Length: 374
Image 1: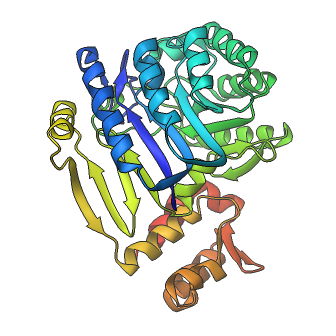
Image 2: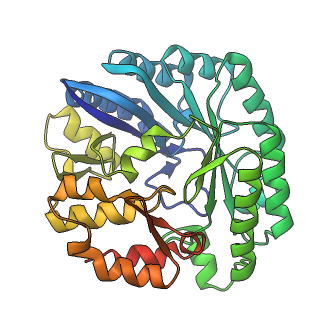
C-alpha cells in the first residue's frame, strides 16, 4: 500500500491575525457544519488505498471547531490507515481550546500539538490581532500537559511592530521555562493582502530596524541551542528526536496529500490545489464534481530547483548522492558554478557528500535560494 503524508485544512478563525495571508476566514461560522461534512467525504474518498505516515491539521484555527464538529473530524481520522507510531499534529490557538476538546483530540489519536503563541507580551499580542493573553496560553498549555500531550510545539515570531530585542529574548526565556519539545521561531514577513501590508503601505507600521531583526534571529538562535534545542531548519528547533516529521516531508520534496478548501497536494510528480472558495468547494464535493484547480506536472528542472531550495532550508542541507539517485546526474553538472560562487561568498559549505548553509548563509538564505532557480 502506498504511503503519503496528509494535510487537512480548517479555514475558520475567530478573528484574522493582522499578519496572516493563509486562506482562512473569520465570520463564516454558518458554513462550518457543511464544510466539515464535505471535508470528511473528501478525506474518506481520497485516502482510500493509502497508508498515512504523518498527519497535520492546520488552518485557520482547527480548534475553533466546536466539540461536535471536532468529534466528527476525529471519528473520520480514526478510520484512516496509519503507519504505526505516525506523527499526528493539530494546530491549537489559545482561547479556542478546553478540556473536552483536548480529550476529543487525544481520543482521535492526535499525539502532537502546535500552539500559536507568537509572543508572551500582551500588548504585542493585541497589536498583531491575537485573541488571547499570555496567561490564557499558559493555562491551555498546562491543561494539555495534564491531559497527557507529551509532544508540543510553540510558534513564536520576531520582527513584530514595536518589538525590541529584549522583548523577543524575554519571550523566548518564558517559553523555554515551559519546556516544550519543539519551538518554531519565524521572522515577520509583510504579505500582500494582509492588514499589516495596508498599514505598511500607509507608513503606519513601526517595524524594528533590519540590524535589530538580525540580532533577534542571531541571539534567539544562540539561546535556543544553549537551552537544549537543536536547530534542524532555518526557523525550527527541537529536542532530540522531536523534529516535526510532517514538515520534513515538504523540505525533502516527498509526496503529500492536502484535503480541504485551498489545500495543495504533490502526488506522482503532479502539484494541484483544491478550490479556494468555500461554498464552491462544498457544492462540488456534494455533487461529486471536480474540486481541484491549478494542476501542474513538474518537469525535471522544477524538481531539481525544489529539491535544492527546500532541502537547503534544513541545517543538514542536501546529500549529493540523493540528488544523483533522484535525477540521474551529478549535482555539479547542473549547479557547479552556483555552488562554487556561494562557497566563495562564505554562504555554502560542502563537506562529506553534503551541501549546506553556513551560519552567514542561514542569515542570507534568500540570496542562496534564489540562486537555485535555473
